[in-house]
Structure formats: C-alpha cells, structure tokens
Image 1 (cartoon, helix red, strand yellow):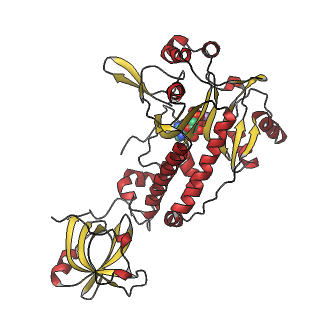
Image 2 (cartoon, protein in one colour):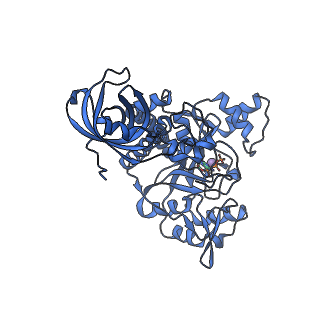
Amino acid sequence: MEIKKTHNIGTLGPAMKGQKVVVGGWVEDLRELGKLSFITLRDVTGVSQIVVAGSENLSQVKDLTKQSVVLVTGAVQESKARDFSFEIKAEKIEILSRAVHPLPIDPLGRLESGIDNRLNARALDLRNQKTASIFKIRHHVLLCIRKMLSESGFLEVNTPKIIGSASEGGANLFSLKYFDKQAYLAQSPQLYKEQLTLGLERIFEISSFYRAEKSHTVRHLTEFTSVDIESAFMDYTDVMEILEQLVVSVFDHVEKNCTEDIKNLGIEIKKPQAPFERVTYKQAIEELGKQGLSLAFGDDLLDSHLRTLGEIHPGFYFLTDWPLKLKPFYIHEKEDDPVVSKSFDLQYGYLELSSGGRRLHDPAKIKARLEEQGLDSAQFEDHLKAFDWGMPPHSGWGLGLDRLMAVLTQIDNVREVVLYPRDPERLFP
Ligand code: ATP
Ligand code: MN
C-alpha cells in the first residue's frame, strides 16, 4: 500500500498546472455529476477538489464514506468550481482507511453537536476546522511564551509531578499508591521552582498540574496547564511587568501568525495595551463598598465580588497587595505595612488568570508563617534545607494557560481549549 504524499494540499495552487502530485487526506464531501465524481479532500494544511473519472476510479469511490482516508495520484488543473481555484484530476485513488457511517458527530459542524458529544469523539472533532484552529493557536501561544521567556533569560525546567509530601498544605491533592508508599500528584511547581532560583536564577516551566477539587465551573479542570516562572533578584512588580509583556506578546504573535485560524473562529484579536491597570485590594474593597457590597480588610473576595469588579474593570488588570493572611505561607509581607503582602492576581474581568508575588527567602520567617497557618514544618524539611544554602530573594507567578486560551479565543468554557479535558465527571476518553 502506497502511503506517502508528495505534497501537502496547502502548498498547491493554480500555478502548478500540469504537475503530477500525490496528495492524501480525508474525504469531506463527495458528489456525483454524470460520469464524474467530485471529492472535497482535506489535509491539515488545506482543502482541494478531486475530479474522478474513468470506470475503475469511479467504482473505487462509489460507496466511499465521508472522513475516509484516501491517497490520490493526479495532475493539478484549473478549476471551474466557485470554491476552488485549482483541482486535481485523479489518475489513481487508493482508499487507506474507511470511516463508519454515520459518524457520531458531524465534523463539519453543519449539524451542531453538544460539547459532551464532541469531547466523546474528540479525535474526530479535530476535523472540524474551528476546533483545529483552537489547537493551532494554542501551539502558537506555547511557541511565543517559550521564545519570549528564553529571550528574557529564563531556562525551561521540568519538576516532578509525583511528589512525596503534600506541598502547600494541600487539601486538594490527588493521592496515589506509590508501591508501598503514599504519594501525590503535584498541584503546582511552587516549592521546586523557588529552590531552583538558587542554582539557575531564572526558570520557567510549562506543565500539567492537578487539583482534586469538585468544581463544576467553566474555568476549573482537575488537570490544567500552568505556565510558571520564578526569578532571583526580582520583586513582585518586576515579575508583573514580565507577565503583562508576555500577555501582550501572545496576543500580538497570534494576531500576526494565525490569521486563517482567527478567521475560522470568527473572532477579532483584541490586543491589550501595557501597562495593565493596577488595583490594590484596598481600592477594590472601596469600589465594592460603593456598589453596596461591604467588606472588611482581610475578607476574601468571593465569586460575586469578582463579578462586580469585573464589570468595573472589564479587561486585563492586576489586583495587588492582598492581605497577608489570605495568601500562602511563602508570600512576602510589605516591609512598610506587614499585614499587606507583596502579591497580585492578574484578572481578565472576573476571571483570575494568574497569581504571583514576592516570596520569603528567610527560613526563620517561613517557619513562623507555617506555624501561623497550622502547617507542620517537619513536612517541609527538604524544602527548607535549601533556604540555608544561599537562597536569593525571588518572585514569580503561575499563569493558567487554559484560561488564557479561553480569553484569547473568546470562548467561555476551558474544556473547549483543552484536547482531552479532565473534570470531576470526565475521565474518558
Ligand atoms: P481559583 O481561585 O480560580 O480556583 P486558584 O487561586 O486556586 O484559582 P492558583 O493556585 O493561584 O489558582 O493557580 C494559578 C493559576 O492557575 C490560576 O490563576 C488559574 O489561571 C490556574 N488554575 C488554577 N486552578 C485551576 C483549575 N482547577 N483549572 C484551570 N486552571 C486553574
Ligand atoms: Mn490564585
């Protein structure tokens, strides 16, 4: 069986008239017209019309089903069809794989399928050009993040996902049997990335992390992708600037490199302007107070509060200087106002995209904070050792890639921008 193509469809054009090519792809449509058949053939790069004539070829395609895989040998010619500037006159057609009929979803999206049906048939759903475009954009987002961070002097690292102790106190850790021991799935690279600033100064990681939360929202998954950075010799305002530059670069890169996919999705890239607005927690509770939502310093902002703030600040903005007691043990206090922390969230309207801050690097302070928060410092022995080996002052953040993708593509549900999303109900496929 011949299986190799000479060309991707996207590289063909009317200028190649007369040239013999071998193309392969999926049958999107099939029409008979007298003694001819027309196949709409799509590969990942483009779409073309195949003209089939001759009894042998016609008998091959007679009962061909949609989404079957075929390899076509033929010559490029001009096309009279409205939708195509060129076509391929088939000399030989080989059917490499036959698709069932009917398919569980219509991959062309002419018949709308619910998200659950589409996720149940995700591989097929990717033949829908809208879905494919989401993941082509996601690829570009990752490319851009890697490029931007490496150019800013950050090294990409990989930290363990199987961990031996509950890192951040972690009520929401998945536990697993590790031979005869107890282990957990990492919920973030927090402790490792902090330690790594000691040896590598600036590091980043892009990876899946796990949260055992029974959240049924459009923004929570049990397995999500996080972009994390940590840098020595930087304060929280420095890493905020890196974060806003990164977001602007991503929008810019996608706008420039994904024009076809943006068109497929029917969206316009709304490139944000840096600097993003900075709103302190104290300002935020004042703003909420004026809306009749009264909060005292130290109260956490609930979903309803964030919704109201999101109406006041509909785009990207930083919520900074949270009360220290609302933040994890590793967050640094403000020197001039120690009940306030050097911390921030990056918001898009009501939606939290990232959390970050300056970290403590004095082990005595960390131990005191662990105690305050009712955590057992013995559990953090391995981590705390590193703080006696020359730990530099450092800051960092974690950015939810799936949420950023949802904002970029103007899609509400993060499940749409993740290939095989995991949530409390969904474990297959
Ligand atoms: P939330 O309050 O929205 O549940 P969080 O404050 O618990 O988020 P962090 O621990 O600050 O989350 O994680 C950093 C970022 O990772 C978040 O801002 C978010 O973008 C992303 N993230 C965290 N948990 C999830 C999740 N369950 N699903 C998808 N993304 C997540
Ligand atoms: Mn957070």
